[in-house]
View 1 (cartoon, rainbow, N blue to C red):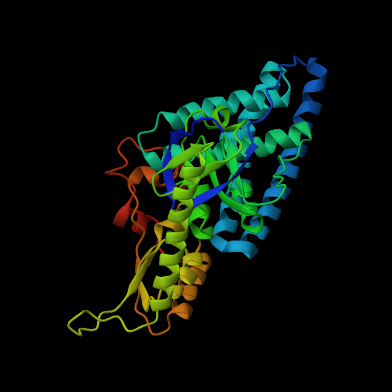
View 2: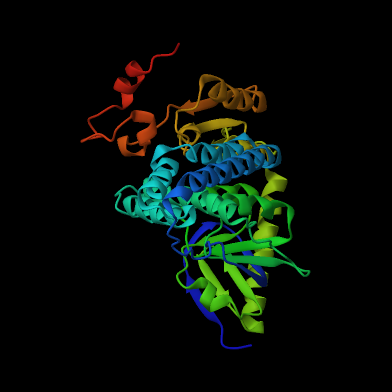
Length: 375
């Protein structure tokens, strides 16, 4: 092996994984500009809408698969992506460009996507900037449908694989749950991306935001993903492999040791009983909270119900179902739900209408509640 190289990114899901890198590039193939005869424009628009319908069907299937595999919140990610296909800022703009410029749908989609991504990149809010990944996922789904291409497959030849990618869409992250994947690393992504949330829920070590990752790893025989420190080690030597193997084993041993103590009474050294409560963001985290010995929920951050990139706020039934699962899991309580805590810029334009001049003073808090009273 060559001298080991350490790449630095953002550790978003703790743990250590050692294995053979499986490199997958999810970026769409470059598309050529095709100038169409004016009489062919209507047919091209029809082709665009047929492709969008196929993409929407696929996203609906992914929503069902995700809900069954890891929980309704994850299914909502793909349902939100499906609804994004109906957003006028995407599909209508692509159609407008096809009609006005008499160009092929693939090229029009690429141009509209680049324009929208540039708008996201100019936003000051981290959460909203990272929603560009949702837009790119939806655009990639539609581009593949137009080109008649399937998503790249993930093939493992045995042993533990480490997925290495430019970007890991949520659909790909969910498939990792049923494969021999020890960890993953990507060039893009952030703390609030949907793929990060899925990785944490599945307990898969992950590092995101690693510049030049594919270029550095594509010829490597072995990599280590350190989700604690946010490092990806390329072609580590035997001594380094041994060090990280021991760290991984120590982490597993410590986790098992703590789980073995989880259901003992929680008392201080002087005999005072305390109550162990869990803070969670998503309903699927209930299982981990119970396994860790939690007697209730100290804080359920309900804003994650509102941050699924949906073009509307979650309905009363959807919220009630989530809270009912919390209460059923901890019937003796306590269960504390925090009213969603969102800055004005985090409420999507589709929810509040047109962007506000000053969202901090605009439609939020009590004003939003009074504007949208319960039925």
